[in-house]
Structures are given as structure tokens and as C-alpha cells.
Length: 464
Image (cartoon, rainbow, N blue to C red; front, side, top):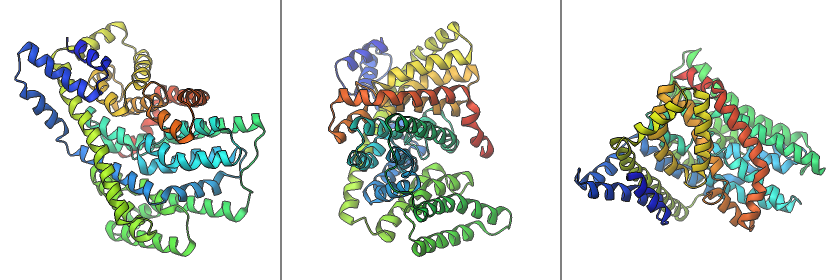
């Protein structure tokens, strides 16, 4: 009965959060087995969680980076690094999304922020609008895969999985997805006879490679100084940060400091300096230092607007989580999750078959629900089955998030689809057709990640 009420409310056009909470309340009132106050109690307790504090701070950090002129720096860095390749701006689009993913944590922020710059630049250089929209949509899915990631925080809280392990799990798959997209760009460039978009100049390329080397070498040098040389951790990190700022001032780096955001975040979590929640606060402080003090592109009036936007987004996300808390509890209490698990395990006990079925289900659900709502509904149903079949929950979390990111590209509810249609001034139908070729690298990456868990679990097992 609970399922029927929920589906009826969803079909009537109610928002998914209201449908979940409303279905639970109507069921309780109809059966009379529990007091109605249980709905409020479970919703409040569902968001009374320390890990969930990371949600508003990661949203704030992404908004600060997006509004402090950081996107232009990322675009120029990517242009210098790969703009000289054939189909250059397509490669720039992918590389820029990889970098921006390390700051925003959401696909929509990537599409709306960096996508606006990238689509305009590609159209100005003669690329078709459909191609520009397609590569932007595909690369936006990297936002929640490469850490930090808002969906990983929600999944980690719901499935009782380490958020730090999920963040590490997303690094290698994110890089492989980016390479698959760049291969696709190269294919279209060869097919259409596209050349480079900027002239190859050794000074530009060397400077971009030098910035990349700094981003890679800085944490390795700090790690060696602490673990091998035995230097005190806090003083070493502080001194290394001062040297980093001095080098940025001396050499006028384009994007070293913004790119350091995920490096500092992952480094702090894996070394135990802070938890993921404290890391989200550190990311906000880092963004404020860059915006207010270093680049001086952030003003107080803009900061207030960013904070208000963050409050609005956070309230939406947490209301969905709260509603899903009571709905998931009711599903468990009424035996729905047990029944579904029993049906699935009666159908197959092969992990690979279950993963195939779960992928099809999540791809379908992702077309109708936004990721937070989908995660909060699917986790109580699918995670118990994973535990019985011995599927690693960190691996399954990455598979779930990738499925739901692909769902963002499809009608009828794909948010990235609608954002890019508005940015590019295309109809939803033309935008959908433009995205179709990019499902090949995305679905190929999904299959590889689903059935090669070593790609996902290699880094987390080194630290957890």
C-alpha cells in the first residue's frame, strides 16, 4: 500500500520529497499503527548527522569558486595544456571539467559555470552547437565522480560507508572517463577534419606542464618531508603552503592554487588531519582566501549572494534527505526492502547479474529523479542485497553515482540537459540528440567500472 500511495503522489506531479513524506504520513494515518508524530521525528533524526554538515560547506565552496573568477583561470590553463591538439577546444572542455570537478562536486555547477564559457568559445571558433553541448554535457558528469562529491557524501551517510574512501575511489575512474571522452573528441576531430584552436607554443605548453608538475609534486614533497625526513607535520604543511603562495606570486601561475583544492582535501583526509566534514570547511576557507585575499575577485555583496544561494540549495537537498529518511524507514518496517531482496536473490545469486539489473534500474530511475532523491530511495533497497552478495559498498557507491549522473543527461527530468539547452539556446529535443553520441564513452566507462572493481578500490585500499 505504501508503494501505491507514493507512486500515485509522484504521478500527480508532486515533488519527490513531498511524495515520500506524504506517502509515509498517509500510510500511518490509514493504518493507525503509529502516531503521526513519527514522521516529524524520523525526518529530523534523518538529517541530525555530522557527516551531512559537509553538504552545505561543499556547496558553498563550489559556489565561491564559481563566482570568484576561478572558472576563467581553469579554462585558460586547459587551453594552454591541450588547446593545440586537433579538436582543441573539445579537449579543453574535458580537461577543464576534470579540474573544476575537484572544486564543485556537482554536475550542474560544472555545466552552468564552466559550460557557459566553453560553449561560447567553441561556437566562436566554428564548432557546431550540438558538438559543443554534447562534450560539455558528457564532461559535466565528471563533477561528482572526481572528489569532492556531494552525491558521495549522501551515499556514504545513507549506506554507512567512509566518505574518504568514496572520494579516493572516484579518482582513477574519473581520469579514465576523461581519457575516453578525449578519445571521442579526437575521433570527431579526425572525422570532420578539425585542426588546433591555438597555435602550439613551447612557452605556453611548458608553463602549463610546470603547473601540473607543481600540483603533483607539491603533495609528494610534503609527504616525503613528513614521513621520510621526520619533520613536524603542521609546521611542514604551513611552510609548504607559504612556499606555494610565493611561487604563485613569482611565476604568475594560472591555476595552481585552485587545482590544489582537491589535493589539500584528499591529503588532509587520508593523513587524518581532518574528517570529510572538516575538509569541506577547509575547502570553503581556501576558496575565501583565494577569492578575497589572493585574487581579490570576490566582494562582500557577491559573498552574501553566494551564501543565500547556498542556503537555498542546501535546504532543497536536506529536505529530500529528511523525507527519504522516513520513507526508507517505512519501507523497511513494512517489509518492502526484504521482499525486494528476496525476489532478487530468488531470481539470481550471481553478483554480475545483479549488477546488470541494478545498472538498468538506476539508469531508468536517474531519468526521472534527481541524484539526491534517487540515492536516498535506492540505497535502503539495493545495499542490503549487495551485502548479501558480497559486493563492496564503496564500489557499488561509485557505480550508483555514475548511473545517476548519466540520467542527468536525459529527458524527462535531466537537469544538466535543461541547463545546457538554456545556455546554448537549443531546444530540448536538439540537445538530447546532441548528447546521444557521448553515451558511448559514458556507458563504456560504466561497464568497465562495474565489472572491474579493482579500478575503483585500488586507491581506497591503500589508505583504508
